[in-house]
Amino acid sequence: MHIKVDELHVPEFVGIQTYQNLEKGLCELKMPNYWNKAKTFFQQFRDGDFKQRKIPLSILDETAIVTDPSPEEIEAAKHLPYLQAVGILSYPASQCKFEIRYAVSLVGSRRSGWSHKHFDIVIKIF
Image (cartoon, rainbow, N blue to C red; front, side):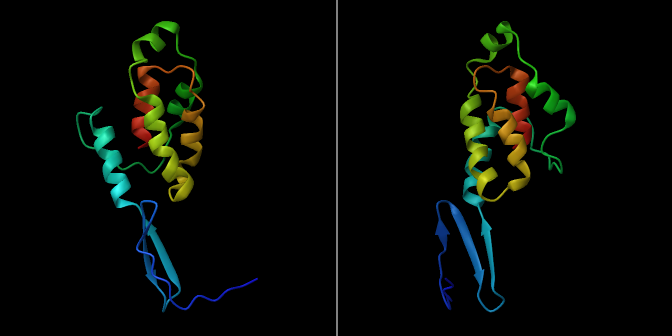
């Protein structure tokens, strides 16, 4: 079944702002408000600005994520909002920022215990 839509203007849906050009048949999805709020959250754990990263997860970071932290490292990092940080990245990874999907999936598998290094990698992904 195909339905032709001649005109439909939806300025925002679930935090995703839509920009439509019906003459060219284009629709662009952006999430500036979501990213700005996420930046405010992540900034509290950084001293400087965020870098532009072409690769969301380096090989070294991937190796570190799959390495189990010691009980002492888990205890030292249990106060960090790791799960919240991963959750903030999960939404855009599934909706518009597909290049971070694998990285978010990998850090999301570390739910039972994380270290400061694991948390720093989540911030780097952002």
